[in-house]
Image (cartoon, rainbow, N blue to C red; front, side):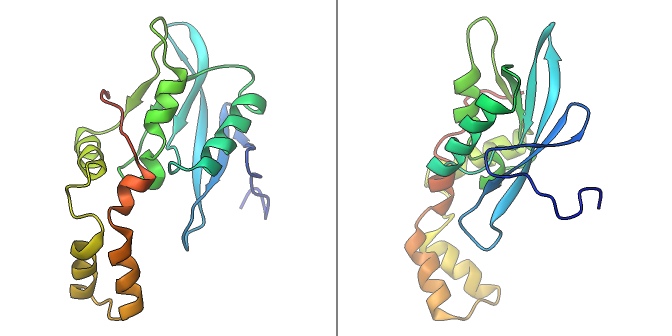
Length: 172
């Protein structure tokens, strides 16, 4: 492992190669973080960064991103956001990030597969059964038998929409 036990601190990056920065954002469950990446980029002659994945929508994650913007991106903008798949920790702040760096002259666009974009948009609408009784039934049919665990799943409602309140209306 090239970095031994070294990990990026909250709101900071770790350079892993020229033009490649590693950052971690906290998660509120057993898997307590997600690894994210910033790639030095250029679009139409404009220098900036591409983010690969976003973290969930939370005040803590937004604060960490703001620190990264202020101290780690060399004053350059975010040019695009690539989301690898529709899990909340990967797409949660895509809308916020693209809106924060979007302008008429220099749009910041989401890059994501059509299938994952559509699934994420649907899941944010709270109509998909991603949580609540439907999720508890699904988990119980697949081996979860602890009633306390199932009760927690029922209480969540649509947990997805809490972590992904919006998905950008456009994508590439």
